[in-house]
Amino acid sequence: MKYIAFTCIFVWAALFQATGQPGPSKKSLHTLPPEVLETIEKRIATGITPGMALAWIDSSGISYHSFGKTAADGIPVTEHSIFEIGSISKAFTGILLAQQVLEGKVRLEDEVNRFLPEGVAARKKGSAPMTLGHLADHTSGFPHMPDNFTPANPNNPFADYTEDQLYAFISSYVPSREAGSAYEYSNFAQGLLGHILAQNQDTTYEALMMQVIADPLGMADTRIRLTERMQASLALGHSGGRVVENWDIPTLAGAGAIRSSAFDMARFVAANLGFIDSPLAAAMDLSHKVRHDKAGDMKVGLGWHIKEGKEGDVIWHNGGTGGYRAFVGFVKETGQGLVLLTNSSTGSDDIGFYLLDSGSTLADLKSGSQAVDVPKSTLEDYVGVYALAPEFSITITREGKQMYLQASQQPRLELYPESDSLFYLTVVEAKVSFQKKEGKVVGLVLYQGGRELPGKKWNRSLDSCEGNYF
Image (cartoon, rainbow, N blue to C red):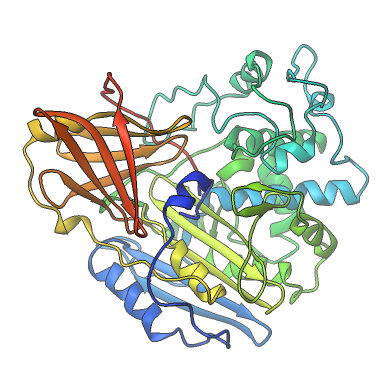
């Protein structure tokens, strides 16, 4: 969300670390470093990213930097352009939880079952009950997505997931581990948390988010349902260079339904840094506190993820819906923060981390227009599931001549041919080569950051695969 060091993707993040020159020295960035401008302008020019709105926040104020257009025939992007922010909504949900905790309305240790309707109960493995805190820090035991998620429209996949389905999955799901014992990024858990917090106040998630966060911070263009003004300023989402549908997420709203602008999100980050006086200051501070360090090389707070940086911890989240990728992050030690919103399915987390952490680097991404032509019959040979580790696999699918790669519980990503057996991703610097033996595809090798990760092809193939994750 997802969500890359992105939304939700930590096995994936361990594979995909950008390479290149180290980040800039940490001074005021009212003017972006030339290497960042060059990177952004290249992505705009090659069509990787149609538009981008960036906001830099520090003690001297906020500066905005806008690039590209809302669509090919659209208007220039500005700080008031509207984007889907996907899983960054989880940071809002974490703050909503923290505020209710501080008001004495809930406790982090409260059992989830206390807030569910009669006849609905989450099962547990072992002695530890599932709590609200577990929902917020991705240790609930719930999976990334529910197994009764069967969208009628894959291009707007969450629109028809109902409250009845939510409760049915809770009642039927048998966890494989004890709550609190391990990290698994879960859209379902965060969506359930948002649902519980709204129900606890006898309101909707959107109304709660507006009442507690958006309106007090003056974020008039931060909503779930597009206002007339937001609709007029909407940057259309793009995937693979094509305009795609916006996503509607009614039941799991707390996991990824919010839309916003760089202007509004800059105020949100400034408030988290303490630059804006806000009644949310204590709740924001509580949401930043580390609850565990079970997410690979990351720590986790209430909704937020926390990455160690050279100048201090980067408190961050990203988001991804069908045609959008977003990033927000800040470093309390330096008093610097960043918002980066795009109307592209290609992430730009590398730019966010590069500007916030001098130990991070920029990626050099290729565009889909650089792909070569490969016959459909050859592409079809590569379709299947490849196991790289006992619990980590890569699924290769095809739609016409477009290939896709999807790692375990991760978004589906476009894959482009560099030759008839070597393919590249546009979202990160990574390639995949397919291996043959006696004319039959037997495996692949994932190349990234100087590493080679082989995977064996399973003895079955898949005709399609859903990539509907934040």
